[in-house]
Image 1 (cartoon, one colour):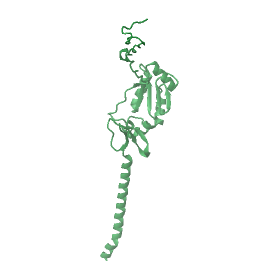
Image 2 (cartoon, one colour):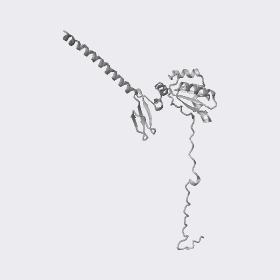
Image 3 (cartoon, helix red, strand yellow):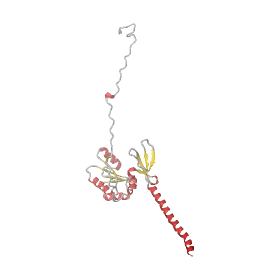
Image 4 (tube, one colour):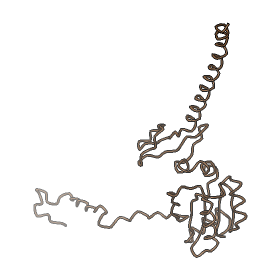
Length: 227
C-alpha cells in the first residue's frame, strides 16, 4: 500500500518541478531581454567618413551618436547623463542667453544649477550678438531661455519651473559629482579673414622683349643707324 502511494505521488512532484523550472526559464528570458534593451549601441563616424555600430565607446578622434530604444539617436553627451535626464535633454535641450552684470541672469543660472539642468550658455557682448539675439527672440531682453522650441523672455522662477516640469526635468539635481557645466560661448563667433597677400609676394611682371625694327643691325646696316 505504501509502495503504491509513493508511486502515485511522483507525477505531482514532477509537475511541481516542471512549473518551477518553467518559471526560472521565463525569468531568465525576461532578464536577458531587459539587458539587451538596456545595452548602449554607438553609431560611430570615423575620420574617413565610414559609419559603424559598436557597443564600445568611440575613441576621442571619432564622432558618435547613441542609438537608443526604437532606433532613436541621441548625442553622446546626453547618453552619458543619468537616465532621468537623457530623454528631456534629447527632446527639450535648454539654452540660456546672458550678459555680464545681469542679476536676473545670475538668478537663472542658480535655478538651473539647483535643479541640475544641463544647458548651453550663449553670451551677448557685441553689437553682432545683440542683432542675432533680436532675430532669435524678437527683443534684446535678457536673460532669454529656450526649452526645446519654447521661448521664455526674462526671469521668473515660477514660470521657469513650470516649463521645466512640463519638459519632465527632475525637480532636484541627479547629476553626478564629476559633471562640469560647459563653458559659456559668444552667440556670434567671428572668423578672422585670411591675411591679404603682400606686394612682394605678388609675381613680378617681366618686361616684354623689345621689338626689332626691320633694317636695324642688319648686315646692310651694321651700325644700326636710324633715319
